[in-house]
Image 1 (cartoon, rainbow, N blue to C red):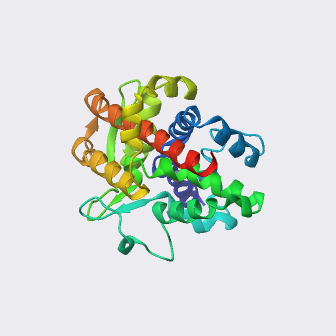
Image 2 (cartoon, rainbow, N blue to C red):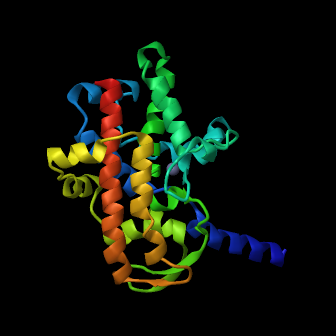
Image 3 (spheres, rainbow, N blue to C red):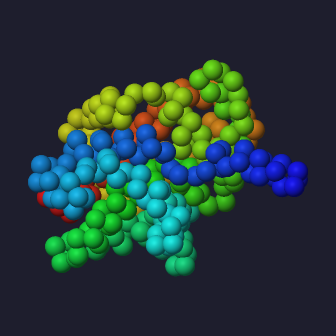
Length: 264
Ligand SMILES: [Zn+2]
């Protein structure tokens, strides 16, 4: 009995830092908020009709909330975007049993190209995948680099400057954002969304696979700035926050581009 209790306690202690849902709530909703600010009026209206009157921000985290259910378990691996040694996605990286973010996105975007012929419920769920997975493929910890060890712990200093042991994955998903950025989602989106039209065009040029390549190249610095067992304080945040914010900004604009192309 005592051993069981100790084991249960140990498991409970382990779970929060080992949980892996890209970006957490703040990141996903800020990406969706930036996208929403850049949707055309017509696209926004059509999309919200399919989302039962809700916004894309409202459903930004939906895929993480339902991925454990029997109905959506098949999307478990859709939250990860694999790349090869050149930081590129190729079809060789696809495990057909599992899928991945690019596979999932290409599939559902392909279906949404004919959204008027789909049942409303199919448009609704496919939209939720797009809103979420464009975010996931821009998250440093959700890009799966060939030959890289991404499963290790670091000592991350929280807002009280006390180092705690964290799974490096959850530092990128949650801890950087919740330590360094305490704005609301709308405020953070407002601060980030300041690209010129030319910058916006440059960021949104290309395909999903090009965007993943760009994300993988930019996020490769994660291995230099957060090494196994390293103590990560303000110096780390000074490098990590601009990377996280740049990824969130790009993801937001790219999500808007996909949605405008489909629904405007
Ligand atoms: Zn996810």
